[in-house]
Every structure is written in C-alpha cells, then in structure tokens.
Amino acid sequence: MGNYQNMQTTNQNVYGVNLKLLNAAVRFNALMLGLTAGTLAALITFFATHASIAKWGSDSGNYLSLLAIFFPGYSVTSGGAWVGAFWAFVYAGTSSALSYRLYGKVLGTRIADILLSTVPTENPVLKPSVLRLHGISLGLAIGAIAAVGLFCSTAWLVIRGTADQSVHAALFANYIPGYSVSILGGLLGAVELFALVFIACLLLATVYNKIVEFRHRQS
Amino acid sequence: MNRPVRDHEILSAVFAKMDVMAMTVAAGVLCSLLLFLATATLLLQDVPQDYPVGPHLRDLSNYLPGYGVSWVGALVGAFYGFIGGALAGFAAAVYWNLTHYVALGVMLISAAELAD
Image (cartoon, each protein chain N blue to C red):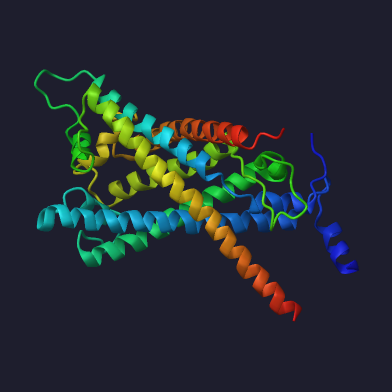
C-alpha cells in the first residue's frame, strides 16, 4: 500500500494528475480505436471487393483496382480481397491510433473534465460513465492525420511518376480548390482538407454531445 | 483552471462507454450532409452545355439505386448517406464498447490469476 502511494506521488505533476496513468490510458484507448477502425476498414474493403466481383464479374476492377497503387498486391479477386483487408487494417488502424494519441495530447490533463458526460463513478470499470467528444481536439487530431494522408498519397503518385495519369486523384480539385497531383498541390490540398475535416469533426461532436446531453440529462 | 484529477476520474474517461444511439445519429447526419454537399458542389459549378456533370460520382448509382448528380439525386443521396453513416456509426460505437468490455475482461482475469 505504501509503495502504491509512493508511486502515485512520484507520478503526479504539479496539478496532482497521475501522468503515468494518464499516458497509459491514452495508449490503451489509441490501441482500442486502432483495432476498431482497422477491423471496420478491413471488413468494408473485403465486402466491397466481393460485392464488385458479384455484380460485374470479370469486369469488376474499374475503380477499386486503383487501390493497388497504395495496397501492394491488391486486385479485385477473392485472393485480392484478403490482401486489401490486410492493408486497410494497417492504414486505418495506424492512422486511427495516431489520431487518438494526438487527441489525447491535445486534451491532456483535462481529459476527465471534457470526456465525461456524468459525474465520474467510484467504480469506473463496472459502472462506466458515458463518453463525450471534444470537437476542437477531435478536429485537430483527425484533420492533421487526414492532411498528412492526402499529402503523402499525392507525393507517392508524384514519386512513382504517374502524376499525369492520375485523373481520378485530380478530381479532388472539384472539392478542394487548387488541389493538383503535385507536391505544391498536395500541400495546398492538405491545408484545405484539414479545414474541411476540422469542420466535419466539430459537427459530429456537436450532434453527438447534444444527443448524449438530452439522453443522459440528470434530474 | 486546473484542479487535481483523481485516478478514478482518468479511469472513468478511459472506460466511458460510447452512446450508440448518439453516434449512430451523429454519423448519419454527417454522412448525409457530406453526400448532399458533394453532389451540390458539382451541380453549382459552371460546365459547358451538354457536358456530363459528375460522371464519376454518378457511378454511385451502381450501389445506391435512384441516386444521380441532380438536385433530386442529391436528396436521395442525403437519404442514403444517412443510412450508410448511421450503420457505420452504429458499428463503430458497438465495436468500441465491445473492445473495451473484452479488454476489461482480460484485465480482470489476469488480475485474478495474479492474485492467486
């Protein structure tokens, strides 16, 4: 017991927050989010590939086959669906886990104040509280990862020498004015995509929190 | 203003469950708006007469019957966007809660074994 209290004291910062526990908590949730998003993305890729094969048979590689640019070994075949699921898990899992790490960093020691919709229970394990979302932190985290993702994807198209043939990627310019498949266009697109994702996250968090507030209003 | 944060508050934040209904509706609303705006953006752009508008986005009609790059299609797309987003939000929230329950179960079993 004495050792536990010593550990608590040494791990606390000036505001009395157990930083070791806080960091472990953020790492744990990053892992959970990575697993969640990775599994969902893998399932979607797997079933989209099979749906495409079922609908169009041998002509099914129209748009989905473009994924092979980023998913080495992928093709619109039964075997390719497994390869696609693997890469989707890796990309979505990694980017989601990184997003949560960033989200946790932005929230910092305010995590308990911001994320809980109800008074924290004495037994958080068996009687969990309901999660709230912090739109600004969420927007900063997911927006940053999306922006880096767009820039890296564009840079990859430029590096492999297929920028001029990337007509589908160039269609982003319809939604992101100034975007082009070039390093400069990728940078400009990344900044604009960050802003768009930030706004989308604010909207998501606002609607989610309003419903949580309504459903868990304490009398 | 900073105040001392107790350990059980941090644990509460980690193991807080996601409200499935709220995430379902929020993701549905967001996806609905995104698909509507994606269609509307193309419709509001100046294109030469008889030039096809949004041929690539129109291909979504292969998966979403009734969808098209028109104002009616944008509304149909908003409906499908809500359904698709709601399904994704529901799955994400359920899976998030499930992974936490499973992780928690593993931790409790490990702790019980260590105690023995």
